[in-house]
Length: 258
Image 1 (cartoon, one colour):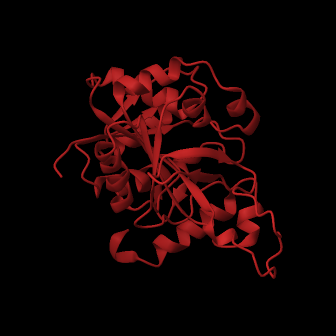
Image 2: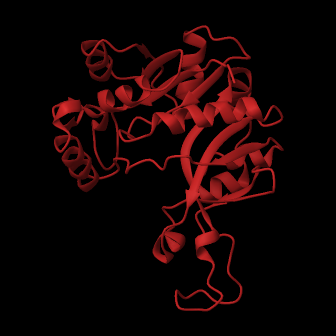
């Protein structure tokens, strides 16, 4: 299947847990560069970092990456990506993939897969990915977003709660324990540019405000999200100092690609 798409990596300096996160050192390179280099291994036509911070802008230029400066008042990375598509002059029917700037171990195979899934599912407005839940603790963790899909892999709902709920028992030793059938949602999205602009103008949904999950806005307004089974599960993202150390250790163990 022949198609083209663009990657935009939203990157902001202010982070509650890790201020200046995109610039933090990961085995000799800033985190944003590690993510950018993952994106370079994909089939994307262009890769652009979208930021509102001059230090991040300068850091991307220093490693010869493409970067654009966006407004400071965006409430989400999605809004920043939407502005970037306009600054880049992308057509409404262009495909753009929102790649989070704290995923230095994202698989380029997965990036391509999510973009391809949107092409394969023309009635979907957004494409994303999921993978099996690995443990009961993960199933019950509100920081792990779960997704339930229909037979076409279109999302029925996303939640921080354990879904689907196991009516006949919730302990790991229960004979009818099927938490492993649940799916963890992975925070990678592809859109058509015209829809992305419209999405950012939609009224936030009550479910979105309750769960703090932006993708619920699309479902609330009746727009389909196709969620494929990830062909390659990404490594850990960077949400804490411990995550940062773990990722740095990984790259330090692979000196040939540093």
